[in-house]
Image (cartoon, rainbow, N blue to C red):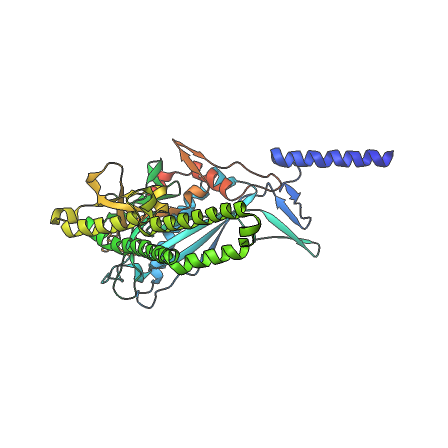
Length: 450
C-alpha cells in the first residue's frame, strides 16, 4: 500500500511539473539565484534567472575578389563603431540589459559588395563597404561532463540580421524577365516592386518580411522602361511559344498515327484475336463489341483531330495563349513611340487557369504603368542608390532581414508568436520581439546617413 501511495504521489508530481511547463515558467527557491532547472536531458540544465550578457563573434566576409581595394584599419574601425552603436541601443533596453535566462551572440561581418552584380565601369574603389550584425539570443544552458557543469555556447536559435549598405534586391519578389549583361556578369533581373505591408515607427516593412531604413529621396529600386522590359521578356515568351508548338507537333504526330490505315488494322486485328470466336458462338455479343470498337476508333480520331487543330476557345487555350502573347508583345515592341518606350512598365499577372494553359515562363502581361489601375510596377535593383562621393563606410541603408520571421506589425503594435514551451527559458524570437518593442527605432534609423 505504501509503495502504491508513493507511486501515486510521483505521478501527481510529474503531472504538476508537466502542467507548469505548459502554462508558465517554473518557481524557484529564493536561494536559487540562477534558477537552475534540469532539462529533459539530465546532462543539460538551464539557468532561468542568470542575467543576459552579450558576446561578439567575427565572421569572415566574401573578400575583395582581387578587384576591390581592401578595407583599411581605419575603415574597419568605423564600421565597428556603427555596429557598436547599434548594439548599444539594444543593450540599453530593459530586456537587453537586465533580461534573464538568455545571452546574445552578436555575429559580425565586415564585408564587400559582389563586384560582378554591379554595372560595368562602376568605380569599385568608391562602392560602399557592407557590414552586418546578426543577433542570436541563446538560452542559458549548462552541460555536465564528467560530473562538472560547464556553460555551453552551442545550440540553435532564431537570429535577426541588421545589414548596412546591402540592398534587398529581389527578395521574395516575382521575377518578370532577365536581361543579359556583358562579360561573366549574371543577367539583370526585372521583378515586381516589393509592397509595403506595414510601417513600424514610420519605417516601412516590405512583404511582411523585412524592414528598410533608406536615405531621404533615394529608392532601392528603379522602374524599368517599357521597351527594355518588352525586349527582355521576349525570351520567356518565345520559350512559352516553343513549348506550345512542340506540344502541337506531338499532337499532330499522334493524329497522323491514329489516322493511318495500319493503326486501324492493328486495332481490328487485336479485336479479332480477343473476340473472333464470338462471331459464330455469340453473334449478338460479337456485334455489340464490334460497335464499341468502331465508336472507340471514331472517338480517338476525333480527340486527336481536336488537339492537333486547336480552336480559339477554352480547349485550345494551351496553344493560343502562348502564341498570341508572343505575337502581341512583338507587335507592341515594334510599334512603341519614343515616349511609350521610355514609360515605366508594369505587370498584370495572369490567372491560375492561364498559367495552367501555356503561360509558364511568362505568367503575365507587360503594359504601360498608366494604362491600367492596380498593375504592379516592374523594377530592377537600383545600383545607383548609393552616393559614391561619401566614404565607403558611411551607412547609407539599413536592411533588417527576416524581420517578419519573428513579428508581424498590426497597426501600431507587434504580434509575436507565443512561448510554445516552458521546459526551457524563451530565446530567439521571444527575445527579439521584446527588445524590438523596447528599443528606440528613431535612434536606429539615425545611424543611416540622412
